[in-house]
Image (cartoon, rainbow, N blue to C red; front, side, top):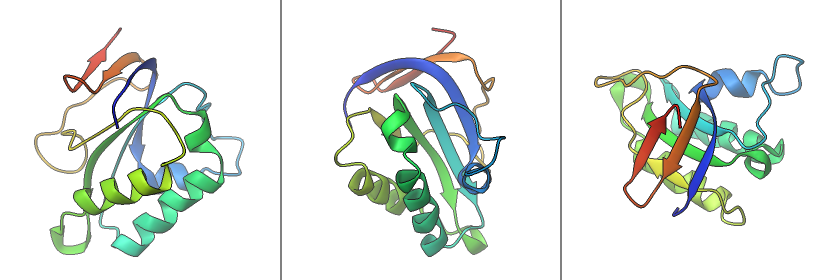
Length: 131
């Protein structure tokens, strides 16, 4: 989804962040750029976790979303299916989304500092760190 935003980067496994929902350990999502990925999760569980983020209001709070690798059991690549799910579940939201970002449990795996300010711009597409 086209757009541009600036905000703190919050990365990690989709399964780990959804396990924090409803706890005092959940980070602040307001204006954040989420960088999500996961490994060894079947497609139906990825769908459930994305739905939980939507129902918890996370997609109403964030400034942007970056999708990395989503590898299922036995290495199946579900990245395209996850992209389609996210686009459908966030059709009423207006934050920018890029997918296919080289981040997660596969090489290449670009690293970044959690909480660092980033700039997401889909016209290039790019994710600039320290913006």
